[in-house]
Length: 256
Length: 340
Image (cartoon, rainbow over all chains, first blue to last red; front, side, top):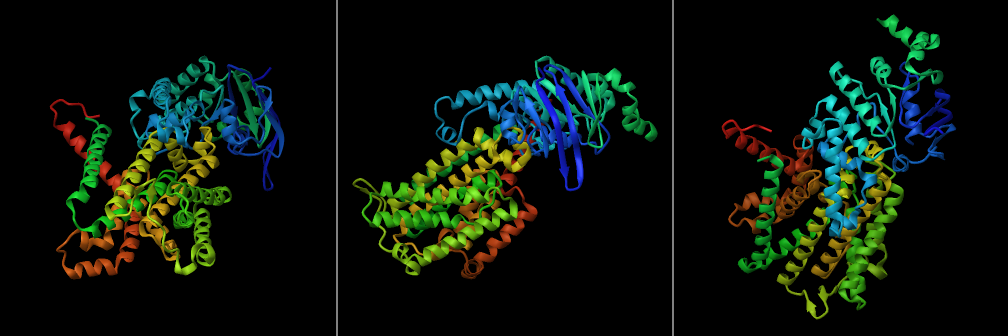
């Protein structure tokens, strides 16, 4: 059975149908890419999957349970985390603190416990910090643990957001254009990081523009165009799909 | 040494010096007037500690803090006059203020920015009207008179020195608890909400719930300050719980710096002392004092504007960058020392 199942998702904004009856399945342990030209509905689909938008029709099922319309934090608790196209880091906080916030659902200390430093608070804090350092190591940012997120260069911020998402101990990670604004070396490093994360047992869905990265890392690709799914399959088949070439690669070829 | 390390040591030294000064002061300063002023400073610090969590950390504005101050003061004053032991009256005052906070938080924390400001401002005005009009409980515009001093069993806090120590003991507890909150998980959640609400949600934070929690905490601390105030002065009237006071509190947090308890305390001390400058610094020229006192409110307004424009991180941000610069200079001097 698939881990994540999208069935007939439709989302309209006023008169515009951003996502139109889209269905696809994501299997455990894979890297799944969602691609398509600008305005194809990729980010909206992501927002629907993570509870940031409510669909007008359709269901999202994760591990056999419907998560459609749940609040974002509830979906995170079930093990589905996301990053944003425009990184949404906590700029005033350090890299380590960002990851510690990412671990919110895996830690328990509340206002009263923290205020009184009840038994267990110190131990949880120490363990959380160790774990946060480990997450930073996964993306290669351990040296930057004390850096303020707002001062970090763009490439590191992208990686930090992934580390923060890892902090939640996810089963499924949804990455919204993680390579946007990265140079070639950084993109290659990102691909390496994504594979390493997948190999630890985290399933990944990635919305991406960078075709090199998509073809390089994905096991499965879904192609959206104007809100509709126009193709689905492994990278080699997608590259040869006439509808895809016309809608997307063709457009790029024309641009070039 | 790294800037954060140096910062921690400097903070510890500053806290120790303040603690010693506060404890020693009544034995050194004979002037009871100064003790009274510093007691008011302590009450304001409790007030601002709550607002700092809400506004300084979580970034949620409240222009109605005076209402919670009033709820605490009237509730415990009324209860104590009815013969209820002070500690119970205190719990009642804090509880009613927190409950008031919950009632206003539930609908309005779904609002953001200006809307939250308007909702809390409206709440403050409604409560002010309530304090004035419910004469049978609050004494109306004449106020509630004859509130007994605080007491715990046979121990009565009736003298200025006793009141001073009571207030500052509560200040110490409140600041300790608040400092514990901000350096653990809930404090990080508050800062995360301030930094990016969507980012916080994506981390699994129930932002509405956390905002309601911190709003209730800040209301409860406002109530606590109000309880102390009522039993300290022995009299409360609506003129204390105005929008004007709420705005001064916001100015104190902003001057101190968002996301810093220490800064908020510094801002509170400075702005509370301003109208009493002649008592604190004897020998200031009379005209200077007169100008400062006549223009106190204008200075508050000017401080808020200047901080917003030129010092968005407040006193705390300024101190941090100073320490960072010193640390950098220190490490640069070490031959071959690596600059982190």
